[in-house]
Length: 377
Image (cartoon, rainbow, N blue to C red):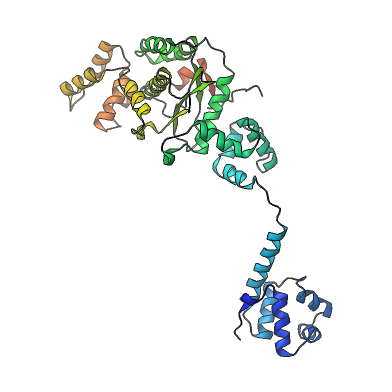
């Protein structure tokens, strides 16, 4: 038997129509089904739902596919649910945040004070406190505005914004010397004298603080690809955040000098300069071009590097690398990193790419790597 179920709003209406076609009433159907007549009445009034077993029985009685009864029941239940649903304006905000923010990792890192990861009410409360906002909508709106990108396709992710916010919260609690117009250049000049030894990197946080620059190290969140950030508190106090995503001496100096150039140029005052995946840097951004050039020529000028490569390529002997480094008072790892980039052979000179994380963390404001920075809430 073929029937258009679209004309019926509920299973009860369909069953009532089928009874009329057969000239039956509820009493007849109750006898066939061997149930009380009140049960049939509840079925006709849609007070009793049609389940899979009953749908098969009705198929046998009326010749209507069981799927039709079940489809009609599903549509009827959904329509009732929509009527009863109470609109929640913040639901979509929760969907976005809970879907995009690494909630579990933020809890594990101690950023959110939550014991039960299924306690969404507590998580929501902690998120508002973490981002210092009054509503969930404000989290995305405020941070995306502060970190606006000219290229909308390249805008930062929620994970990256969470990392940036952690840097900002720590920086707000720091006390450093006043920042002057000459401070950034003075810091750069002082840092240049540290390039020769990895151990000298322990002095970096102190030099930056003495020159009014807040320096914060925060372990990156998984998947963020964060390298660094430059921001200003009240457009007056510069902040540099670094992730140490690549724990190598060459990468440390490159990222630090990159962010320092942003500070020197006053970048990041109107919108936070978020630098992630610097290997794939967007060179359409003029400010990033400026910072990248400063970082790439900080330890070794382009002229000296090109001269060395022209003389020694394609074979770079160990004695040549050490000799060049000693002559120019830089760590061999800095030159090794540049030669890796030039040759595109990242397995070469690796012994010189020493780790610096354990050298710099003890003297810096840091969060992660097994430790939680104790913010004053």
